[in-house]
Image 1 (cartoon, rainbow, N blue to C red):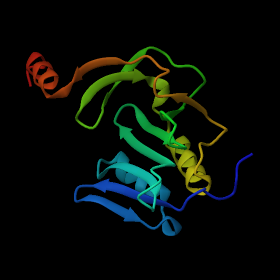
Image 2: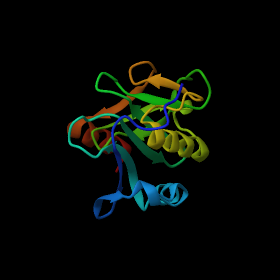
Image 3: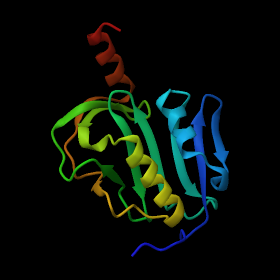
Image 4: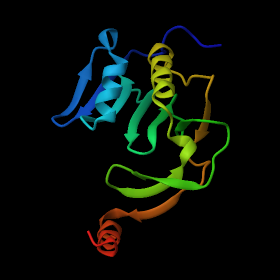
Length: 164
């Protein structure tokens, strides 16, 4: 059963061109922030505890053009991270996703969810500090992925091969 309050006081930050900006959760316009991310005006949304410790619960939401929203949640310090899914099983990796400039991988399409799923997962997490139980969540180590490149040397080699 979902509790009505998060276990710790949560804050929300959005990564925009000028850096991370904290947003008051009480006045959060979920649709407005989601549109900023879709338009490329913001890159990431992070929900995190106000206090420095503990580090959890935490949620990250990114957007990949041609893919959709990637929603990752860590409910507690023992969590390896779980992704909201569209559906109940993962297909083979096919959608490219850049991981913070550290790697380029292909992930199953089901890990890229529609805006209404991302919005509902965010609203539930802000309210409870937990994953929305009405969605299927897959562990970070429980789906197939294809690594295209890792680290700077791998990126340079891949870009050379692509003629970039």
